[in-house]
Image (cartoon, rainbow, N blue to C red):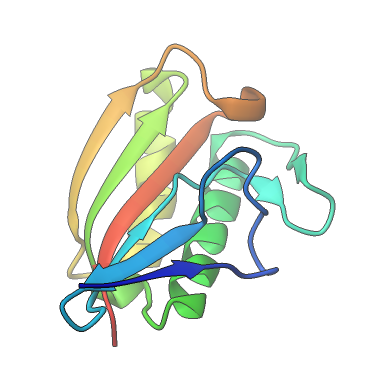
Length: 130
């Protein structure tokens, strides 16, 4: 089974002992991403703003990781969204819909007691390679 670590400077570097993503499978056809929080990759600082701004940044980071892995948001099979406050669901969902359009992936959304760096949202994905 092929297993390749993915890294891009267009998304926040790992802030712990993990990879931004792993491409794996018999032919490297699956991509498993780490959770992406709304860090600006240039500054490694949390973007300021509400859940809509933070969701947009987290999804941009996720998109950039998937691109580096040879995939895209259109190839995502499943996401998990972690919210610091489930009251933010509707606003997060509106931004999420902008990124995933008419054929969104399967998704789980849960409230987490606390997210890294004080983020309001974290999003991870499983995708297939192009």
